[in-house]
Image (cartoon, rainbow, N blue to C red; front, side):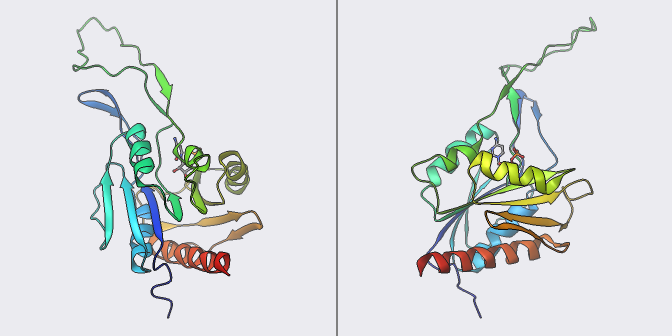
Amino acid sequence: ENHRSLHGRHVLVTAGPTHEPIDPVRYIANRSSGKQGFAIAAAAAAAGARVTLVAGPVHLETPPGVDRYDVESAREMLDAVNGALPADVAIMVAAVADWRAADTAGQKIKKDGSGEVPPLSLAENPDILKSVAASPARPHLLIGFAAETHDVVAHAQAKRTRKGADWIVANDVSGDVMGGDANTVHLVTASGVEDWQPMPKGEVAHALVERIASHCMKEER
Ligand code: C5P
C-alpha cells in the first residue's frame, strides 16, 4: 500500500569502502561490498524519495532512480556528502577507513633490493557521520551503521551518543556479512534496541525504509 511513503523527501546514503592511496598503485582498503548501502538507496528510491548515493569503489550497478556520486577516499566522501546536503534523512552505511597514509607518494614506491621496508605512517580520517551530526544542515533523521565482531549492541549504543546519530543499525560482522547477501541487525534508538531476524540485505533495506517513513510521518503530525 505504502509505495510512495518517502515521496518529497531527500535521502542521502553513503555506501561501500573507501580507498586511501599510499602511492599511485597502492591503497588501504577494507572488505565492504557496498551491497547493504545500495539496497537501502534502492529501497528509498522505490519508496518515492529523491536519493543521493555517495559510493566508494564498488562493483555494483546504480539502482533505478538514484543519483550516484563515486568517490575514492574518505576526504572525497566527506566533500561529496557536504555537497549533497541538505537532506531530510541521511543513512551512513559506508565503511569509511579510519586512517589514511599520512603522506601519499607521487610516484610508485620502489623496492630497491636492500631488504629495507618503507615506513608507513597513518593519519586519522575525518568522521563523516560525526561531522554531519554537528552540521547546521544536519538531517532531521541521521542514521549510522556499526559493524562489530563482538559486544555488538553495547558498542552501537555508545556510538549513537558519541557520534550524535539518532539511530544506529548495528550488525554483527563476525560471520561472512561483508560481501555476503544476508545481515543480522539490531536497531538502536533513543528508546531502546530492536533485534531483527537474520534476513537478506534487500529485506533489511525495505524494513529500515518503512521505519524511516513512519518516523517521518509521525514527525509531521
Ligand atoms: O566508528 P565506526 O567506524 O564503527 O562508525 C561507523 C559509522 O560511522 C558508520 O555509519 C560509518 O558510515 C560512519 N563513519 C563515518 N566516517 C568515518 C568513520 C565512520 O561516517 N570516518
